[in-house]
Length: 227
Length: 269
Image (cartoon, each protein chain N blue to C red):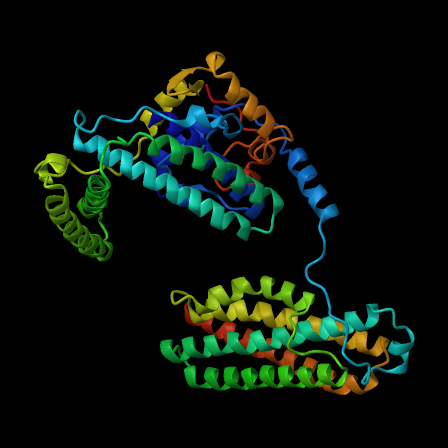
């Protein structure tokens, strides 16, 4: 409004002359959306595992499809997230290398280390899914939804016009999500009595917490550099 | 052209509302005060029977070149808008946004018919091609004349040159195959450029005087004389409500979105 004060005021005046505005009421719109919410199916579905070889007694005993499908969906989601995360870091590393912000070398070393860990997490999850008799190449419903949620992050990081600080903020969104999702996954495998998964998953979670700290530090550095 | 103006003007209002209520964004960040954001001829009233979308064509030997350029340009714009809505609408997850795009796309299809039917069907295909190429050249020329950004201006200049090359090439085809002189269609100079400037006052005048016009066969008539078939077609299309009405219920544009308006603003005397 302040860049076009004269014309902006005319737009506002004419808008204000229209029918008086009742309280903001989205009644009919809400009804239409509510019908869709009630009638819609879910995003995707899980194929049944090929074998049950890796599942614990608890899971096999309770097998009605749900716990198995839930676990494999969650594992598939994390695997996809780590895989996309590896690509996000590749894009960010390319940007930092090209723009050479202050302390670029040190930042690049940190980013490369994180990228390697994201890739290692992906490989570990593929192994776990294979061991459980699942198919690590499928896009599970959870993976599908989280990839939609991450679309904006990729758009920010790969946009040639965005700064390193803006890109770090975007990747931090992914790191924070990843950290809490690992926590939830650890609780799930514990509940499903998949004890042998606890140790590697806790190690991955600890790594993700380090990542958020590292990114936070670089984000602060980059932001303060601009002052 | 004024008839479609009020309909697309209404679409601007409906999309501004969707941008605000769905995404929490202010349309004026794009529009920058160049236009009003108020209802036009309501989208819900724009649905017509097909026979009421066809207009009388211009007579190719009796009109100026500028009329042919306008017709080609607006028809192309309507095609593009229709294609855009049909492609982009389904990318939304929100059901109401999808419905809104679908509803407005249906109107754009009517506009394609309306403006496409203004061209003289007696023009040969090569004559139409020549006018198309001239329209492209004229539009780029208008951009070149008014572009203040030097980087973009060079792009418009380059494309103007391409299009002038096409005009010359089609002109040769016209001579060879139809044994006619391109100047018979194009004259010897392009008309003055299309003016890219705010048209607020013009639009307000048209809105005040013509919002209640409707179409009946090839004519524009007062609302109460609208054709029975169009009223009946609209009744069928709107039988289960209208996405444009449902989404913009009570919407009035305010700077910084409607959420920034703390209290109803008293009308200033």
